[in-house]
Length: 425
Image (cartoon, rainbow, N blue to C red):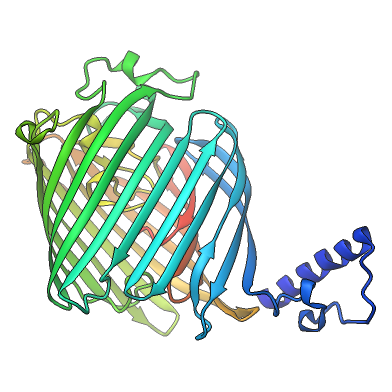
């Protein structure tokens, strides 16, 4: 039975139960196995959106086990393409308690998108994230991205600084931070952009949510930045990007070079410099296969004052330059130090395509391999003492913008399961 028929039968069963328990017996007959014949209130073909319930199950090495359900309301334009998504969820975490998040993603055009989300858990955790981006296709001479972000994350872990930190050195803390980030890009040509990035950030380090794990302030009282701080980070960035799609790429690549600094003379509480580069490339073959590769290097030549929360962070499911790099067999920020090197490769394989109530959906499997390390000195070999990870990704795609994922990775400290929106790279 294909995915569309399975969903039709599931919705038919739910509708029939509603009829039975509410006594709302329709005055005319309809075929339960043909949703398009149902009365309008129960007919998904007549709804102004496609509703997809998504079960949530994640085992994050940092955040315990989370389970719940997300309801994705997909709204389409006149061309039958998704132009907005409303995605609230309710969940429960074994350590943080009950909670949920409200999300709204808008895609007015391929050139502009924005989102807003707000969420909370019973125990400490809070997040508000507002983001707006325009000029994404580089059709005009300028581009802009703006973001306002607040979080209180009590699941953070710190194992000490270095590539060989042991699991026995685990500690827990809460990051409370707020920042405003702006990217102002000059599109020299469609594929080439020179940009300035500004990010003032305020950070406080508080006690974490896990009483069974030592607090970072107790176990590492002398680590730089243990009390928090503030930084006015400034960066210049050069990007070459000829991918066929920003959100769901299947060919082409991206090359990025950046250099940035924070300085006490510019209202920061610390001074440091850093530079780095990122490469992504995608090769498609045999229609269903895309080989995706990613590599990243980061160095901090003047980093004696760098707080641990601004150092290179390796681990987790997202690639966000210096804020976090992907290594899906470990929790977010498992390895921390001045410098970082990582490589990732995965084979994205389309195993099923189906139209579900007018929305074209794709199921993708993606076995992956990756390895990385952090280093204290710039002279250290970036290919030595790597932490290898292998795993499998499960992705649900609604073209042209939306990717939902569940990734399962195995590293040197066991398994990790991550879920969310967008590709890891």
